[in-house]
Length: 376
Image (cartoon, helix red, strand yellow):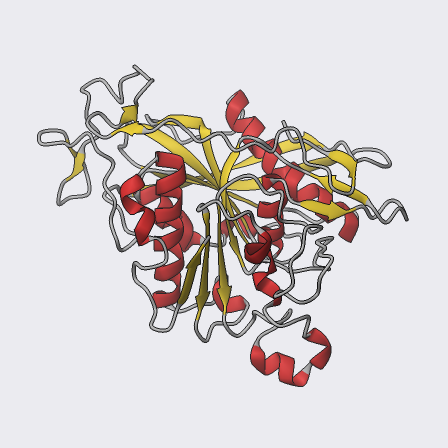
């Protein structure tokens, strides 16, 4: 289902049209045009003091908790997805991806999916990272699917493998070959899939969302790749790259100058970028930039994607004060992780659950003093 297209400069993939999901009927918790019941009783169930599901006074609405800890106890199960790549050059290879699936226990309603990609290079245990996201998302009624993007044949192949991995995992959910926990009664909604990733994972988010990248297989200056998977409805990019990051490009190296030729202006889906103030100008934090001048890229380098997105009201940015690259991933303190998980979840509540009531909360819940929030 992944769209891998080699195109010339200025191309827009035919699949790059964002089709909003149907609104949820707030009285029933269903799509307005979907007559399927949430469960046998017509309710979602409340959590009792013992962590079980109380089916006596349940509400049909999917609640939004401002602190990122929802009403459902959570669990996880580990599995593996095996597939064969289809590289644009050379022969494909088999990739076996460890996967951890966080899920809401006892929840029987519709369950959207959030795919989580770790940062760093290839790893065999990356699916066990970002537990704070898995717990927060699952507690709020999501299936949070964490991938280990295992090592590739090389850097160029890793640029291809990561979006291939995401599509393979969504394929496995579609084909029901990805193991879900015994007794899980939720209805997995594969028309409501989002993606979140940090660093290399942010590249992955932009790749499956339809950003354009330079082609490492040819010297043609105007050749571009897109890895768009139209099943991905919204993305959160933690610490995204600016130009020259993993094939990203921009005709301008000054963010204040207008640009029509860049990686991100064709991204068709809603996007939320979160960037640490200490990392925004380069590939390391401020202290490292002082020791490593070559790590500097440009003023506001990590803000380039947000600056180049279309201004359609569905693009969000939070610059978090004092945070460096690793702190925006898994090394942040509890307050930082709460801010990231809460506001990422609110963003997905809006675009995967059609919760219009949370639109103006994104970036504001559990906010750290001095956070710079923007929307366009």
